[in-house]
Image (cartoon, rainbow, N blue to C red):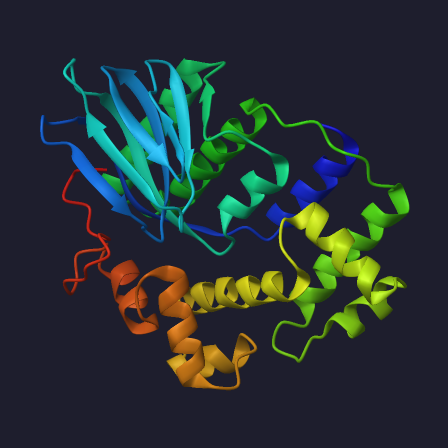
Length: 293
């Protein structure tokens, strides 16, 4: 990975927070099949045996034993068994305060990689499952350590598409702009303000930002505000109105509608799903686990 992409990755992941929702080693049943759904949570799979197919967005994959898969939340997906032996796999679901699909897209990383050290991947999954099922006084720490290790292993193993040139000065200013955005999410932010901070013409700033972040600056700000709201809903007892205000939304109704479009559920439902492990009120978005991974 070149210096520019490494710097951008570190910038995006420096404030990453995750919450494990479920972890298990499963032998998939013959009815392991689900089509066209978009969960808010992220998934990690490690295939031990069997066959099947998994579609992420427009790409269909057929993972084989020894392969490691990352499916970010907010991505339409489908999966199914085939006529062969169903999968045996380690898997987990987790929420994050950063849309990790954006990170994979930014780096041009595939959703599926060959595990370079299968024993290590399985070790971290076993630790994850053990501490998830046996909540001792330090289990939360062990869960975080194992989950971060799995994420890091995947990113370390994933091939990155070649980078198409960014000057050191532009790279530094882009990273500084991302940090500036995060520090001022609760305040009004404009392209003019950001381009002035980076000492670029607004038109150039928009082109440069979109080229390297995959979206215009105002869309990125909107996503980061929703990500901050997810974190506040998961980690505080603030009311929905207070969460909206601290995340940079002045209109609670607009915030609730934006959040539901982004996460698939209303803010209160999102909080309940995290609190009760996904087994709360019925929703049509497929956030329940029912052991189908």
